[in-house]
Every structure is written in C-alpha cells, then in structure tokens.
Length: 363
Ligand SMILES: Cc1cc2nc3c(=O)[nH]c(=O)nc-3n(C[C@H](O)[C@H](O)[C@H](O)COP(=O)(O)O)c2cc1C
Image 1 (cartoon, helix red, strand yellow):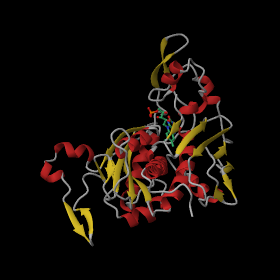
Image 2 (cartoon, rainbow, N blue to C red; image 1 turned 180 degrees about the horizontal axis):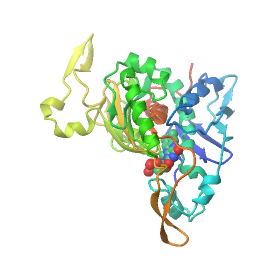
Image 3 (cartoon, rainbow, N blue to C red; image 1 turned 180 degrees about the vertical axis):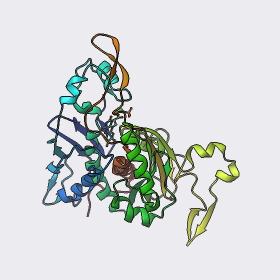
Image 4 (cartoon, rainbow, N blue to C red; image 1 turned 135 degrees about the vertical axis):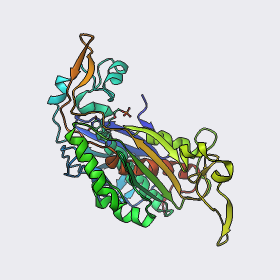
C-alpha cells in the first residue's frame, strides 16, 4: 500500500467514499505561502458534479477545512491537513452487491488484496470521492507554482466519439468551467451532451480524453533517470481512478511520423531558444524544455452502468448476473478535468522544489 506521492512536496491521501471524511496531508510546502480555505474551496467546487443529465445526483457540500499547517493566513512549513466531511452517503445499494464485484470496478481486486476487509461502500478507497483530496493538494500546489507564474490548465477534448476542435490558451482559461462538460470548444458541447444523454438512456456510460497544459515552465524540471518529468506526471495521472492512458505531445502519433516530421526545430525568438513546433510536448530527455507542457489522459467509461451484467458471487463461487444501483456519472472525463490539473500541479511543484526553482521560505 502506498498512499503518499512526491519527494519534497509530499501528499498523503486519506478517507473513503462512505466513511466520515476525505482529505489530504500536504507536507513540504514552503513556509509563508498565503493560503485560505477560500483558495482551496474554489478548486474543490470545480470538482463538484453539476445538477445536469449524465452527472451523479450525489450532492456533497464539500466545505473545506484547514485543520493544521496554516497560521495567520500563511503556511508555517508544518504539514497542512485538509478535509471535507462526507454527508450525502447512501450505502444501501452496496450492501446488496458486496459479494458480487462490479465488472470494470476495483471491487474484485480490492477484495482479494485486502482479504475482504476493505470498505466496499461506494467503492470505498477506490471511489472517485477520494480525489477530492487530490484537488485540495492541487490547490496548494497551484498557489506555490503561482509564485513563479507557472499556470496549469486542463479541458475535455473528447467525450465518447465527439472530439473538440483546437482552442487557444485564452479560450481554455475562460471557457472550460463555463459548461458542465468542461470543454473549451463551445461548438461541440451540444453534440457531446446529446451523446451523453443517449448513453444514459441506454443505461450505458462513455469514456473521454482530458488534455492538460502547463505554461511558463522553465527548462530543467525532471530528475532523470527514474524521476523524469514524463514518468512522474504519468505516475500521478495513473493514480486518478479510471485513467487508462497518458501521452505527451504527439504521443502515440509519433510512432507513425518520420524523424524529420517529429523533430521540433530549435530557433531564437526575442533572444530566447524556443522550438518551432511542440511534438515533444515540452519534454526532452525527461526534462522540461521551456515549451508548453502538453499531455492527454484517456478516461475509460464509468464502470457502474445500469445494464444487467455478468459477474460472480464471491461467497458461493457461482456465476451470477447483476444490475447496479447507486449514483454514478455517465462520463468521468469532465469530472476528471480539475483532478488532472491538480495532479499536474502537485507533480510540477515537487519537481520545482527538487530543481531549486522554489525556495523553502516565501518572502
Ligand atoms: C471523479 C471520479 C468519479 C468516479 N465515479 C465513479 C462512479 O460513480 N461509478 C463508478 O463505477 N466509477 C467511478 N469512478 C471510477 C472508478 O473509481 C474506477 O474506475 C475504479 O476505481 C477502478 O479503477 P481503474 O478504472 O483505474 O482501474 C470515478 C472516478 C473519478 C475520477
């Protein structure tokens, strides 16, 4: 078991879906950083489901509490403990299926690994609920990165079969959180919603793709050989439940390109070295190259669907059929947008501290 991530900026995640609370301990944050519950709340609010078709009806207040590590509005250098209380829990649907693992969910592997002692209510530790702690940690990390004007953005670029067109950074910044699908391309939002509603009517779910961008990174973040920028980001993103693929820059497309197409030419602009294209996605040799960092995370369709499915009864060891009740999003990609931003921010903050870009005391 490992519930912590990061070397110098280290986060430890706690809580379960239907336990009393969910939260995070952030250790290694520089002292003197301005930090309020309001800063964290505004990020946590972006993760809340929107009362609209295709989104879970679970309504959590998610009132952020800072329990430790902040004094007179500034971080002290001590561990910061952040949490929200779980209030809108309904475990009845899970009692009935506790011996029948949901296909596509972690019920089966968690049962075997923890000897059936895992909290199965609402997926327990494997619930998307736990990601609220990632978002709280991300809020702290974003404040740290802000000191160096490093910005992290994310947006939905695909939902089901509908792909978004290109958007500028300005459009991503200003439009993403204006619609429930967290998509910066206003033209495709209606099509995405139609596909979402169709899947919901069919008792089905959809996957999607979230693009993450980090702007204003200096050259030099990433610790080769093993803690490369890509490696650390991929590890952070694969911690998000339902993320099944991560690619950087041209990603899998690079495999079918020629070197002459894939190589980003170096040039001088305003006295600075820049690349004429960004197929590398801002990473060369596991180190940031000063270009925008571009990655994409593939999110699988929500495992809990309303259709009748094949499973097994773990007590009787007999095959059985099951229909899942409970409250679920039809597509997780929009919910994952702020979580991708958060895990990028946490990773970049750790690597920025390791590279000596950020001092231990904010002046
Ligand atoms: C924000 C968020 C919310 C989620 N909500 C649900 C849900 O309501 N129902 C569900 O079956 N899976 C949900 N998931 C996905 C499961 O937690 C995940 O698929 C499961 O733990 C298995 O892990 P894996 O898909 O990474 O293998 C959610 C994931 C995230 C990020």
